[in-house]
Image (cartoon, helix red, strand yellow):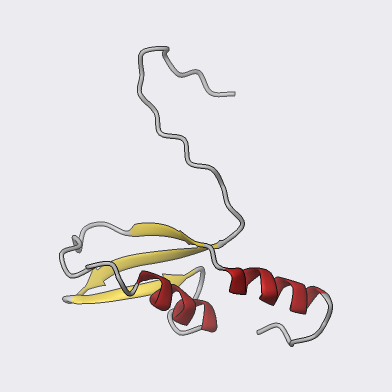
Length: 88
């Protein structure tokens, strides 16, 4: 386990069943990616989920991590598990 002093403030975020999206700025352009991809259907879904955020002011020295959770993820997982759609 991890020992944390009683007086140290921590932020605990629950894990929800979604997928990771990373946002960073490279050569002035905001890039959104998922694990291993810059152009998958998951990246497109992440872009739709993040479209209302103003990402223009993000730092080029940081990578911002989001957990993307939508009903579509559940639908895709069910379809894959039951072989209704091919895995890509």
